[in-house]
Amino acid sequence: MKTIGLLGGMSWESTQTYYRLLNENVKTALGGLHSAKVVLYSVDFAEIEALQHQGNWDETGRILSAAARAVESAGAEVLLIGTNTMHKVAPHIEATISIPLLHIADATAQVLLDARIDRIGLLGTRFTMEQAFYRERLEAKGIAVLTPNATQRDRIHRIIYEELCQGVISERSRAEYLAVVNDLAAHGAQGVILGCTEIGLLIQQAHTAVPLYDTTRIHAEQAVAYALG
Image (cartoon, rainbow, N blue to C red):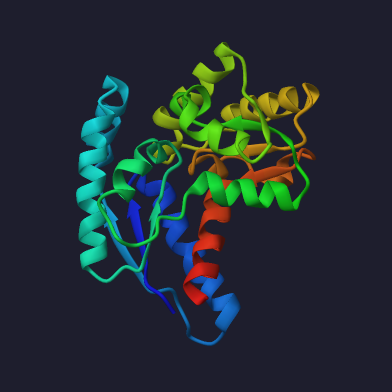
């Protein structure tokens, strides 16, 4: 079994989901008392969040690259960035390490292609929904990406940072997210990507008939498949 490196803490609410899923998937595959070999570097998200909203991506890249090198030095043989948004600086991080980085958008694209999905809705932070770094990875695979309107994007973004990243789960916010999911489906989306690692804490497949693709779960499953070879 290879050792999985995980850059976490963005937020720790979803990082604990990553840790659980990595171990559950290894146990399912190997049984008994088996668990995942994981090296975790958990950053202070307040520092990262401030830089995100300042648009200082170079500094976030520097911080996460240093963390990635530390994880590699600690014995990790493959790297996960435990957040969709910070894959914006994935090329910066990849350039500083010698181990593979499993990109969350690539893992998600493969699941969509396997499901014959070519038109997908995307929920996430404003950065993920509005900037090109994530969408273009999907479009390069022939998958068209639909995003919510500006008002919906603002609300989705606010709920992520002010509620989900702080462990707050609100029925009102769940209803708002599900309304956006339904709206995307009405505009032709064959499913919706939960493109922020915290969104799966709020809405799950049981809440809607629209197919949901939880990137946290997909990323963890791919990592375990890689680690077990």
